[in-house]
Length: 168
Image (cartoon, rainbow, N blue to C red; front, side):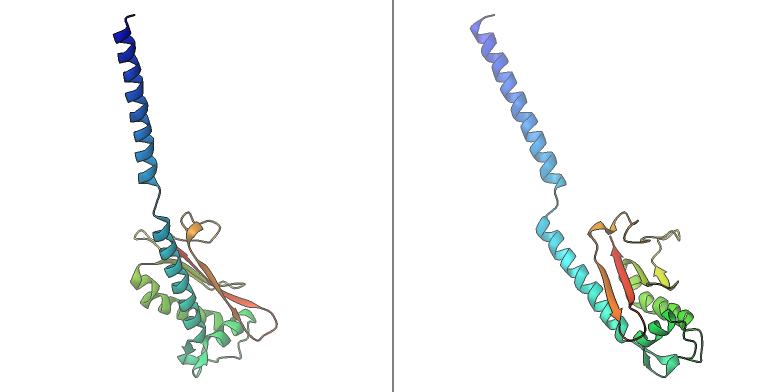
């Protein structure tokens, strides 16, 4: 081969290598999310989860003479039917959870799982088809980066937890 042809082949190899390098750079720069934005979103979600749980814990139950929701949750865990004579504590708590998430989380379009650990009281968001959006922290596809918050219920024989998971 002549010297000119060898230089042209070398130039083609250099151009191809540069194009491949540029393709790899573009691919990874587009895929990688902005970590600062993710951190801000995560901080907002954690704050929202915490605020919701604190407000929920302090909510009063109108059907039980204005007793705090925390006492109703404790009565549900301990199956104490003497706490409030207007109904079964777990049924009342389920209704209270459903009403509260309807005017807060559902209205904001947040996917969630709200439950009272150790009981059947649970409210989970659903999509437009009625399918569950966010079943549990262990099974949800999108929950790996979402905050999970708990509040500990005071009093009673054992610990009780109200758990809220927000999913993306």
